[in-house]
Length: 99
Image (cartoon, rainbow, N blue to C red; front, side, top):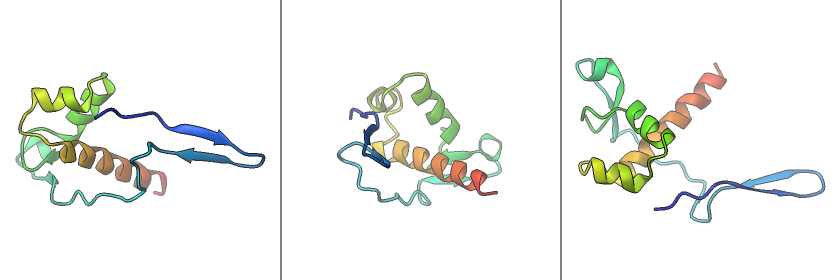
């Protein structure tokens, strides 16, 4: 899966920010994927009870790894797991902005 950058289209009075063509605007429910357990990774949010944290996924993506690269290195993960980590991080960021 290739992630395309956001495109910006300017009209006379507003900026229209559109995601990739496959983006529907719906938010995924990650509550069954992202778990937090005291005994795992110091209580960090992890993927499906494994020892792979949301932070790990974000670091891999930030370092330039693609979804495919991550899935190849960690075959126990799914595309949905990676998207859940991104959604969890986005929700956490959004809630910190409103605090």
